[in-house]
Image (tube, rainbow, N blue to C red):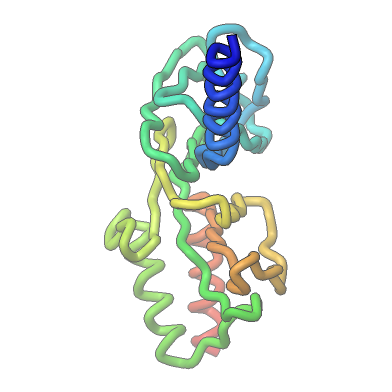
Length: 204
């Protein structure tokens, strides 16, 4: 009888220890932000969300941890996206291509000052970006066509600002003391207009 009690106690202890270890397993980080021309409805059955196309800009973030694929509805068209890898995703349901890149911040969370050479490089890279050239995960530059998805970040210390959101001048540092990954996206027409305005100022 005592042996049985000892075995039972041992089994309970092992079970509790296993539960304790599983509780410590970090939650998978996987999120997606949607930029759309139209209302986003997250109440539809069988899909993550539905978009009713219009001229109104909307954006919404979803936690998709545990999912390897997601189904969405735009108008009457159902689209499936692969989201196997953990990270931060963007879905473009705008009418225009979205272009963007990682911004340069110092460890203190303030933008780095640009010199003349930096401005020249920025103009050159922007011109290429508008053509869909020189984009890569390595350089953190992105061109996302309508109805497409793109993974743009590896970890939760990633912040994405869309076409109608301004990036704060100062960004709060993360727990590691460094600025988070800040990515700013524009529609192609927005980026082309800002480039034209910059070139016009430089000519004066």
